[in-house]
Image 1 (tube, rainbow, N blue to C red):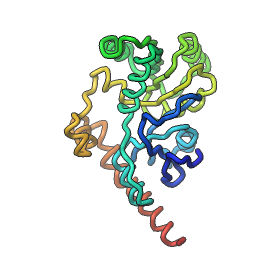
Image 2 (image 1 turned 120 degrees about the vertical axis):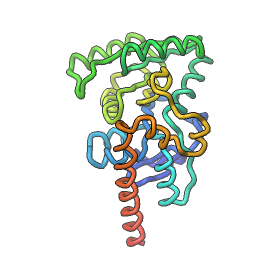
Image 3 (image 1 turned 135 degrees about the horizontal axis):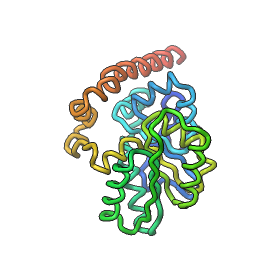
Length: 247
């Protein structure tokens, strides 16, 4: 990924640093997000890191990333969550009576998403596909997903298979998908469907969304925040020390 005028650098990554309204989506665009957990996992998984680096837009979805950029570069950036880009794209699609496709999650969750969209964004035509719940897909399974998406011809494809699977899948199949925008947003499927409650704006504005998610889902979230949090800090501090030595 090259360093763009609307991006800031964090180690190998070019992270988007502008408002969502300034996004240029006139060409095919792969949008992914990065947080402290995905940063750490990418250091252990070269294929995942390559997918993040190969994204056209990489959003700072976490206060740890925002703080790391401030520490390393002195630049202030704003957190942009997956839910933020999801809502932004839906608003645009609703205005132009566009089409979007949700790939991932269960049939029940996808149905709840469609029901909510019908109320909040009635002008959007929605397609969905629930893939098999497995770590790797066969060639025939990938072909069926791609063919289903392409036959629907959406303006936007939302991919929600959890990281790092969703980013890898979107990156590997970007050129095969007949759509302008591909957006990997993971937990947003459950948030929007209401199957998992996102913390309120009160906690989000206090920058404590992570803490409330940890309290609500300790078994699933403890490793992401309590283990990988210190690991991420270690990466950033080592990089800063290395940079200071070289100056």
